[in-house]
Amino acid sequence: MEYSLHALWSSPVKKKLLLLSIMFFIWAYMLYSCAGYCSTVPSLVLDSYRAKEPGSDLASKLLANKPQPWEDVESDYEEPSVRIAAFSNGSGSKKLPQAIIIGVKKGGTRALLEFLRVHPDIRAVGAEPHFFDRNYDNGLEWYRELMPKTLEGQITMEKTPSYFVTREAPARISAMSRDTKLIVVVRDPVTRAISDFTQTLSKKPDIPSFESLTFRNRTTGLIDTSWSAIQIGIYAKHLDNWLQYFPMGQILFVSGERLISDPAGELGRVQDFLGLKRIITDKHFYFNQTKGFPCLKKAEGSSKPHCLGKTKGRTHPNIDPEVVQRLRDFYRPFNMKFYQMTGRFFGWDD
Ligand SMILES: Nc1ncnc2c1ncn2[C@@H]1O[C@H](COP(=O)(O)OS(=O)(=O)O)[C@@H](OP(=O)(O)O)[C@H]1O
Image (cartoon, rainbow, N blue to C red):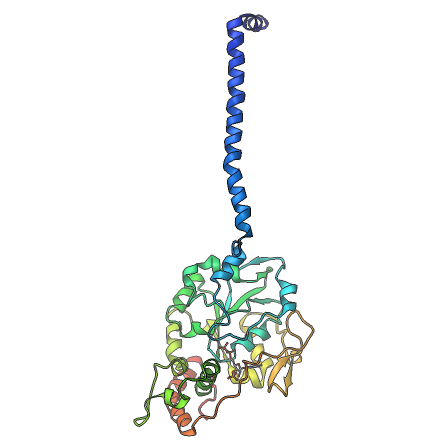
């Protein structure tokens, strides 16, 4: 061995060859390193440049795609600043909702969600995601990103009242998870229709009167069931669609009227349904005379009393009593069917 090495070093041609190959390796290594560096530099520069562009990060992308919560139904919703500070950076992970308030529009869905958020085992997204109706193409990952972080054992929730009347929503929610718990806040369909109309009127003061929108033909008294304010209240019909995908035991019906007269009682039923300890009780509520509604003594993440905003609990316009009666007659058979289906008498037809 010693001899062969000595022989190698001693031969001048071989010495040169060895030197050349060492130089070649050094040169190749430098070229390789430079190529790697050169390919990363522009992208790093570009990335940091992109990061400065508005809307470049994930959160902004979501915001860009995010359904506008102030569109249509939820023009009033604002995340209380206290809540943002207290929970936006919490630990845990984002999960798809295990329970959803699917309806109904103007039923009292915001009140229910705000009350439920007081529970330490519930975390909910404030704005309406409208995933299963308007934003389904964005994909489940987009939807999950909207959710707040939860710890083990906490339930993730959202509310989008239009799901209840969206034909595709039951199949889509079932495809996400067949175990999703569904909650529907229902309210007398006649009052609901007037509430719905009142909301539209507040945004578009020039719309025709409630009375004229109600009828296809006022003289024959034919109701215009294509008007969404009327359509939404045919609860039995919409429920049929949900029952194709979910068993009745997985859907809880909350009375919008009882949610106002006895919020703790209705919240007790909801907590049982969600398998949670009854933590929200009558101690959490007080009746605010000025607002004319129950309010929270302390909102989630805050020590201050909290009533819903001014777009909840609007004064309704006076509607011709004859039209109201005609609508009562129209809804009666659907209501009866609905009571039968749900096994609960909501008392809208006294
Ligand atoms: N505690 C409390 N405070 C204020 N308002 C309350 C409350 N509980 C139920 N309600 C009723 O909720 C109605 C609005 O329903 P939604 O929140 O489902 O409306 S929306 O579909 O999200 O726009 C709203 O309807 P209007 O009275 O017609 O404005 C209220 O009657």
